[in-house]
Length: 434
Image (tube, helix red, strand yellow):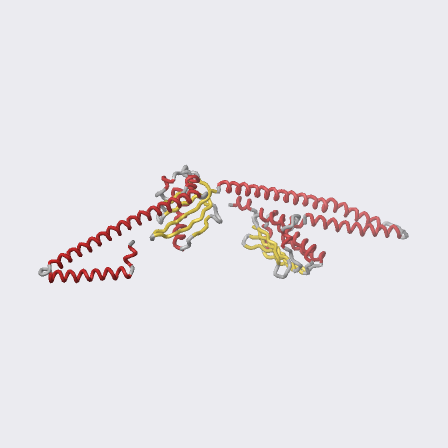
């Protein structure tokens, strides 16, 4: 209704009527004594204009009141719809003002926090936070408000914890957003109770840890058995073969000069016996190099690389740094590094077709580093996902159990590169030292 007063023709008409009324008032004032009808006409026109103004003002007020009432109705309906929508959300929705006072608390929030909405509206958000997290939370909110980002996901790397009305804590996953209305800043947090998921994750992690410990014990038992067999091969069988070799040499020395056929056969037996001795030593060394226990990782790794180079015909360049620190490497860690090096060289000999191999073994800041690189055909991506590819999986699990890591990828030279890092002491020994 009020829009009509802003139209040009209405404004022109109003100005015309006002001008005519002013002229009529001046004329009535000047000639009213001589012409009474003019004064009467002026009075009637003034009353008509006044009545029109009153009518317009009253009508405008009524229209404005009706419009305000309609707006309030629409606002109430909109607020009701918003409340219904927010209450239908499966996640808890909590909105606070700049002073961290709760102004919105939906039905899902009532369920996970076990408190009525009426008790939380106007209360501080601290009631929903464990005491040890409140100071840090206020700092995060202040920083979040200053950087101007409208939304941010929370809990991506760490589990957040909330506080129920009964004082019990539970893990949540949450996201936060901010908005400004009328100069007032509001923060909205959407939360989800992940108690069941956290329990499942913890159970899964415990199961994984148990499997790692079982795998480590199996590997340890395997190494012990290999050591026992290698010792028996080296000591008992080696001694028997050496004695047999000495007896055969004694027998050959006492053969008659004309027993050429027997001497030839004895020579063949001696050669076969020598080959058997060498094979026994090689098998014992493959099972468990005794120098790893007797001389340490550095000497055992050097012997392994040299032996591989001689047998496979591959040029090997080995660099070692750490000196006397190798003497402090624990047996389990030395075994893991040695087996990783042995597995890498075996794979290179079988699959890569490499001509050159580069080996780096170093100790730095309490960490033992191993790197093996070749210039062969390189490892393919599908090789990592082979079901029966247990060598790489076993090495990775072994290093993970010891608190280290192992990575295998394509090398810049085109071949394969293995990188392993492990602390010089196991996690258990570190805990005991602490």
